[in-house]
Image (cartoon, rainbow, N blue to C red; front, side, top):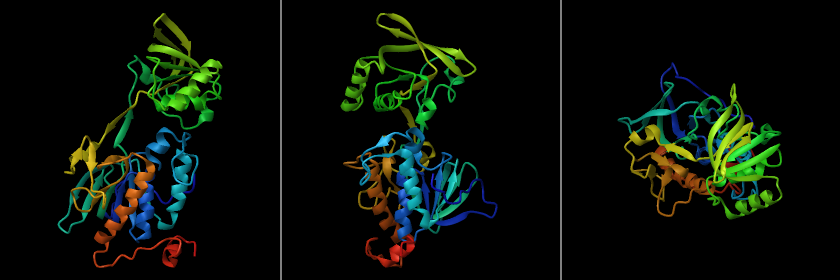
Length: 353
């Protein structure tokens, strides 16, 4: 990964950290918000509950290809994170990983006081919530003792495809994640079995077609049924019991990937007095500001008429948010709209002139 900027963790003994902006969430939208704010001389601190940048993009599918980021025909979640980190280097943001904002209150002077679960305190003129869907937890299969295998031979995400090489892999699920990883891991697996409770899938049709072709070629086995039990010891799986229409089967398994979806929780955000709709933050589409002046929400955590949950949509939202934030951070300074291609002052900030 490209070298990150300084990371701060823990409480600051000298008192609150004063900054222009606090960005909650270090996923792609939060990282691009650093860039857009930086172009306008707005300094940012970034807080994320994870221990690294990239958010869900890097945590859940670091090696999964993404095809709809403009100008990048294909990019992995990890590569996109690295490129964004490289892009924001000129603005020297400060990252606070493995911390969660627990409280947010407005001060008498209009600024916001934020405190993390580690006791780190901030005073900021604007707050940008870019926390994806909030905190996310994979749904655990209802199997006795599965907790003992998690992180050892049961995985809810794949950080490196190579780590799965030579395994008897069982993937359970019928959505995009299950099908995508079936296609990506089949070439490195000793064997790969896809298990779903019915012979219908919620994944993209072209992924289903590819999977069925691999089943025909015998590079993937498709089993319609449900996992009812696990076998193994010391955290290492050896087999799964599967109930099918024809009876009970035992499947060799040294790595299991259950994709039953995610449980999304807003966490403390839900208590900050912001207008919510179905656990999403309502924003306007001119500034991407919430009902609280100075608090913005971009990316998957917000909602508005016509909202599309795409990374490129979050990038657009970050750009408009930054224009509005400038009016708060610099109320007496007129904002001149400039293009990076022609503005010598912006190019100087970026270190390209």
